View 1 (cartoon, helix red, strand yellow):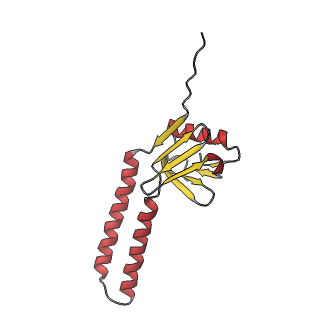
View 2 (cartoon, rainbow, N blue to C red):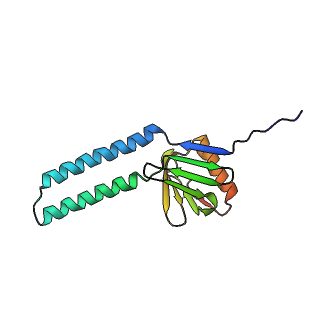
View 3 (cartoon, rainbow, N blue to C red):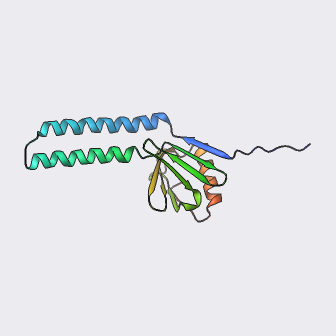
Length: 152
């Protein structure tokens, strides 16, 4: 009798809820501090208004960027990837990714993985020691031999 090998053709990595929750908890605390700061400045013409507008811009930009960080990645054996965030879903082929960078400090397991795509960068909340994320990175290496991995 022959053994049937069942090789999964689809891997899905979901970021730890605690990690994503802590990140957004810190962002909410920062937003509350910004709102208190804006409220204490007051709305009068001149420099106080300019400071309020700058703080508001930074706060809105931080939320816009944070909502685009992916919390889920899936890949097929063919290299079709899908990065899911609260703001959007990016569908990309592993062949189109030029570089994958891990967290800056190698000792820290949790951090952001940066995927350098053709026209933009995509980020993923990740635990780099997770078995599923390692399998996804392995498939990316197999599909795209030219891909550069840093700190992974």
